[in-house]
Image: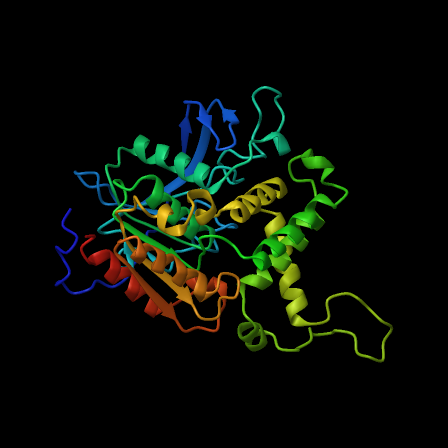
Amino acid sequence: MNDSSDTDLARPEPGEVGLVEVRDFVSTEPFAFDNGQTLPGFTLRYETYGRLNAARDNAIFIAHALSGDHHAAGIHSLNDRKSGWWNNIIGPGKAVDTNRYFVVCANCLGGCVGSTGPSSLNPATGRAWGIAFPQVTIRDMVRADKRLFDHLGVTALQAVIGGSMGGMRVLQFGIEYPTFVRRLLPMATTARENAQAIAFNAVGREAIVQDPDWHRGEYPKGGGPRVGLAIARMMAHITYLSDASMEQKFGRRKRDGAAGVEHAATFDAQYEVESYLQHQGQAFINRFDANSYLYITRAIDDFDLAGAYGSLEKAFREVRARTLCVAFTSDWLFPTAQNREIVLALLRAGKSASYAELVTDLGHDSFLLDSPQLYDLVRDFLAAPAE
């Protein structure tokens, strides 16, 4: 594929990928986790957008964040009220142009939206795995993803793109499969979390395991620690925003009909921000499994490239892909300094790497929101030669 074959053509008007089909890849080969545990096989749920070319080398992998899944773009039916979680960046004529690229997004190993995880049936017991499921790492997720691309017959990835936990998967993909990946585009991410980020995840996990309905991970489908999971989501969601964005969106505004000081004390939601967080928590428990939340947040906390390889420079020693790391000034979960550290280590290791810092007051989730600047960065990075 010639990466610059159409760079001189007029940019098409962005369009939509439209109706998309959910697919399942079933691997029947045994899978060994980093901790030595094994599965006889696994399933990854995924979606594709665009077409694979004759050389089978125009693929792009989209790696989702903690609360994301395989549904990155398009709609499943005409009745859908929302498109995929990154629909603003994926589609014909968009930054990740499905007229040029075969775009793949898969729900991670350990997830709960069709991929094998703690809520999947354990063939040995006929019940959900629960916390008997093997401890999963970011590297385990990436190695499972690679099996999907082997199944699809993809010979090379033009890029791996993702933010937050997805950015961790991007980095690990470049380390694990250096000759397979041509570009890495991590956003709002880190090579290892700081103590504050670990602390937020730890409190979220504690809310789940202290919920009396957790039952050490053994609970019926649709049941379980719903209160604990909602609280974990509410707290995590705060870290995805910023002080400025919350002040602008909510301030100290009270809900319509909220009790005034003349009424008896009430601890129901009085402020708009309280109501918003409650909505986020309730929406989350209807689509996410509490045990998957425990497993995936632990995988995020345990991701430590410097610790795993001796240093960041050593971690990136085999990387061949050209890298662009994008950070956002108001991201206090994975601050700009942590993103810069990745690029500096790549440069010290003699790799092709660049850094972009976008000024925004929208916080960690800035990579998911409407941003023409980000779209231009992604489009130009994909259009430039990989080497």
